[in-house]
Image 1 (spheres, rainbow, N blue to C red):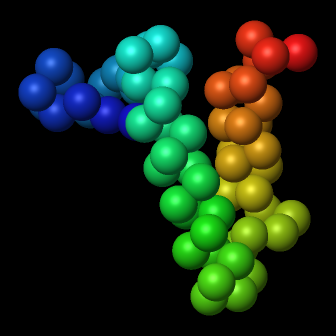
Image 2 (spheres, rainbow, N blue to C red; image 1 turned 90 degrees about the vertical axis):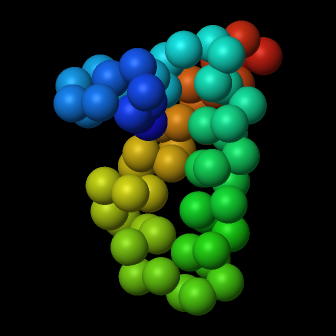
Length: 64
């Protein structure tokens, strides 16, 4: 996740910023819905699927 206003050279990822937690969750959820709806072959057994799972674990780590 990038912030072009704060980091126009795209050198820093802002995915770990607590204020972005809800946005990251919504983006990951929508991406997964899209992939399921259109039977995206990259949804299973790929880096994308691993990263979506990792994002969910990260987002909900304080619930466990």
